[in-house]
Length: 187
Image (cartoon, rainbow, N blue to C red; front, side, top):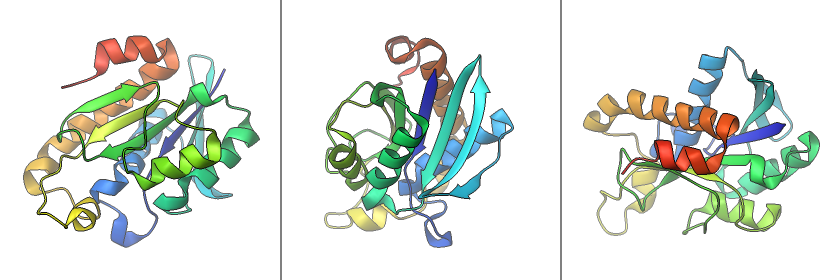
């Protein structure tokens, strides 16, 4: 069985520890715990490892957020991973910070990275792990908020939340999305 885990984010130093890059941050921790490293390949940073006999491939697209679908589509085809075995890790303004939810499908809800994946990979029927970043920003300042760093209070909780997201990814590969939703989704 092949799985493709996609962390959404933007490349470049200026985006490194921003809310919009939580997908990259989570995948960096997955790779660290699995003892795998990253290589710069076509359209993405790429890493892989085995988890209980299953092939886990990971990408951090280098296409920038709004063109994430281009990298996802390429690697899905290249690695022959069916859409139901693709898990996208994404920041989500619609759910509070510290809330993590895995779902089998859903809408892009205005997220440009998810819109790009929908357009280029055949719709909304792919699993996603939504990492809540909350919506604590003044009207009209959404871009500054998502492209800004986590605040000091959030930074204290971030390591435990990232670790929980890693557990959710491992569970998705090992026992599937339904049980992972039941066992590990947080409020």
